Amino acid sequence: MRGLKDSVAIVTGGARGIGKAIVNRLASEGVKVVIADILDDIAKETSAEFNGAGYTTVPYKVNLREVSEINKLVDFTVETYGTVDILVNCAGIQIRNASATFSEADWDAINDVNLKAQFFACQAAGKIMLEKGKGSIVCISSGTAMRYTSRRSPYNITKAAVNALAGALGNEWARYGVRVNAVAPGWSATDMVKDGLRMGVIEEKEILPMVPVNRFMEPSEMADTVCYLASDESSGIVGQTIYVDGGGSLRCIPEKNDLAYDE
Ligand SMILES: NC(=O)c1ccc[n+]([C@@H]2O[C@H](COP(=O)([O-])OP(=O)(O)OC[C@H]3O[C@@H](n4cnc5c(N)ncnc54)[C@H](O)[C@@H]3O)[C@@H](O)[C@H]2O)c1
Image (cartoon, rainbow, N blue to C red; front, top):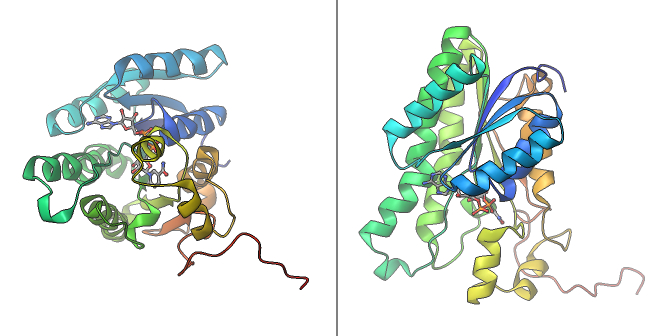
């Protein structure tokens, strides 16, 4: 895609799941990628796997709850690859509990990773992009930013705020050549969702009737859209949230899978 080859990206949460697919997709376009994750060993394995395939990636251990660590991540990227052109804020956590008893500590954790870190990563990487007059930031939101899930309200709230973050910074920075957008994934069978399935708080038979394509999303489908938004091919798109959810944001009530159109 236009404008990607030899550029430099940071992908937070890039060690596994959707973030890993994003690293793969960007690196396959010739982007040098910093895989920024708290799961150090997995980030190292992911980086080694991709470098073995001829890509250029480097793992970096970061706890995104600390703004000072986010700033060091951006410094490391500039020291290693010379600049930063693309930031993908993909790291996120899920904590499931009823709103009536949700603890302050859990609120702080989910808010720190899902929202505060996204803002301050935008700020740290954005400073470099604004100086250069060019850059693209993609924030990972969720289909549950606008279709809510009980017992996960702080997650819903942070993800709705991510859509606002993309809009607000997109509005502020576009005139300086820096575009900010969001991608909202639908249900994707990564570790985060498998945890929920294992715990029994979500069930496949309840999820799929709410998804018009009647299947889980593939992480690569999110990665394709992120890659497009990172590239110059999306140069007119600013502050938008694109739902890559198989149509899940359209559906109001569950639909049976045996709809027969030839009846
Ligand atoms: N899987 C889905 O169905 C789904 C749906 C909607 C949105 N999302 C969003 O997509 C993104 C990726 O989710 P996933 O399903 O791949 O989950 P995942 O749990 O597999 O990956 C999340 C990554 O973020 C990293 N991370 C978490 N806390 C961190 C911290 N403090 N510092 C650094 N890294 C940290 C984890 O180590 C992990 O590698 C998340 O933002 C999530 O909210 C996922």
